[in-house]
Amino acid sequence: MGHEQANDERERSLDPDDWEALRELGHRAFDDMIEYLQTIGDQPAWQPLPAAARKLFDEGVPRQSTPRDEVYAQIHEHVLPYPTGNIHPRFWSWVGGTGTATQLIA
Image 1: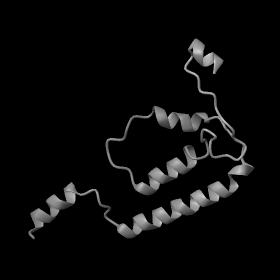
Image 2 (image 1 turned 90 degrees about the vertical axis):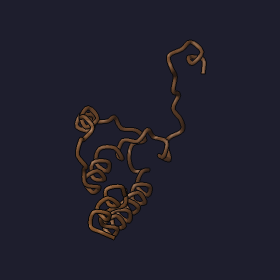
Image 3 (image 1 turned 60 degrees about the vertical axis):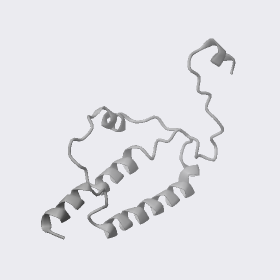
Image 4 (image 1 turned 135 degrees about the horizontal axis):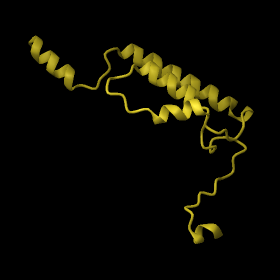
């Protein structure tokens, strides 16, 4: 296989450049989620999203790639602590209405 063909295949692949780094991040994410689930009962059932985390959603979509570790760190810090509540042991339900008269009865 020539150099150009290898580059073409690399550009078409979504495989990671470093499988071991992906494995390490996967193990870290798994360990973090186990820790999260073990301790979620010690946290409030719901927390409002703070301004700093909300601001991230106002930013445009990146035009360049972002390293996986950085994306994971942002999710871990700014998204994971603020679930909708449905994984908390003291969470029972949300009543999600659409604002219609029939939803008022529900």
